[in-house]
Amino acid sequence: MKVNCDQLAGLLPDFFDGDLSREQSDAAIDHLATCASCRLTVDELEGVRTLASDHGRLELPPESKERIRRSLGLS
Amino acid sequence: MQNPEPDWLFDTFADGVYTLAYRITRDRHLAEDVVQETFIKVIRSLVSYRGDGPIAAWIYRIGYREAVAVTRRRREDPLDPVAVAAEIDRPTESVEEQVLAGELVARLDEAINSLSEPVRAAFVLRDVEGLSTTEVAAVLEISASAVKMRLARARESMRRQLEEYLT
Image (cartoon, rainbow over all chains, first blue to last red; front, side, top):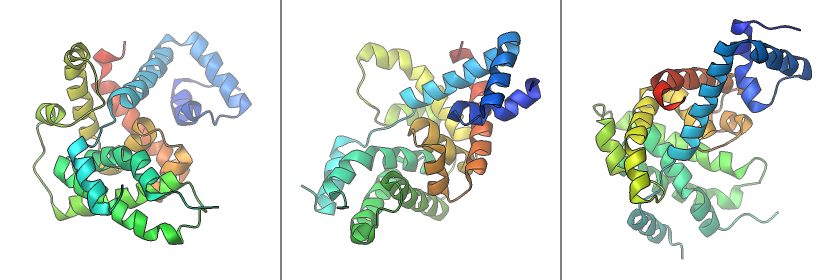
């Protein structure tokens, strides 16, 4: 099995989830080994995921957390 | 199986529900209200929770429904993402890290806010909160393939908007 750039793009959600079949995974890796443009895209998409997990999360302000805890009757 | 304690649930999921609620409502105070309402419902329903699905998905689903409902009740003008980024609380960082991350965080917030609400919800749950695709599908009550389509759209949009920070 071989994939081109468009076909690889369609496989990427499953690629990131590790849900590709062995055959699809091998085809994706083979394509990435020879296509700098797709390699850059995959690297950047990985970068988006890293940015999101490192900087996208928020914390409830401590005073709000305490107020809500009290309103819920928690210790 | 014994149901988890309310204290543990709140400590474990309050920040995650707040993150999701803030990303949906784009309003800190509304997001806090969503957290409160979500945990009132969680604690009330805990006795009937049968443990037949991941508890994270169950809690986030309640929070998501609540966030969507309050957003529909109160439509607001788009907020200034830089001001919003400065206002909201984040995990503690050093002063230097805060300065370095300030612009990036503002751009990240802007990019997340630019996504449509259904796409944003899938992205926040999967890539910010780290739920599995199956769990995100359960929260949003859509198929796993629909989640993947939304994620592909979100990540591609974010990649284009944040390109300068990704290389």
